[in-house]
Length: 253
Image 1 (cartoon, rainbow, N blue to C red):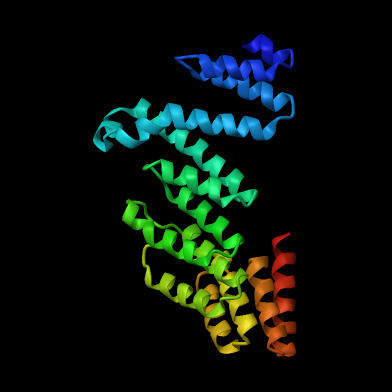
Image 2 (cartoon, helix red, strand yellow):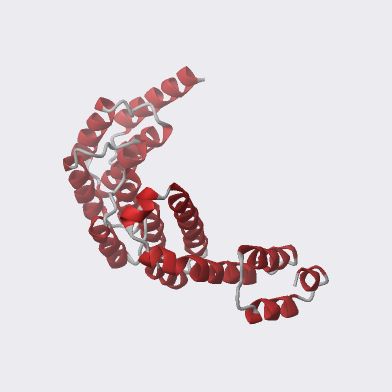
């Protein structure tokens, strides 16, 4: 099989792989590598997907959680597969192929926050907001804890899709979650929503929260604050925010 691949006979190498009754990782890696070297990237991805399904699907679906905890090697192996699966989800997400991403996402019962976050970002990028809301609400039902990236993905997704009220409502909901702390990206996205709504009052409240959290020195949040004041035509405040941002940036050099 390796000989076929190195000689450019990839169709023959794939046929040999298909006929094998016991395909191990060496067999898969050989054909996937040869496809990549010969520029057949999408074929390589398709084969990687098949390998993930065949070698890990049953294990991820049927392995008892208590058994995983008692077997560190098994847990390490499952974490590796989960990393590979999330990587493949991210490839499809970047290619805006959410149909293929959903196929992989739905196949496996074991997921982490990264799996959900990748799907949320992907659906936001194509404007499928109902899908993102459903996924966000399903995170904890799947036994996974939401992280700050989950919240930020939803808030920025709403902003990117011009749903500014929803973004600010999500920001308020996040503040009620004592287990998660906002970061500069959270505040910057919320300030962008305020800028587009023309709501200086809300923006000042959010900026005060950012200052209390020690986030005011970040360029992303500072830029969003300047943008908000500009869009609300408060040029004096915009200039003050800009000068403060420049002073803080120079102080960090």
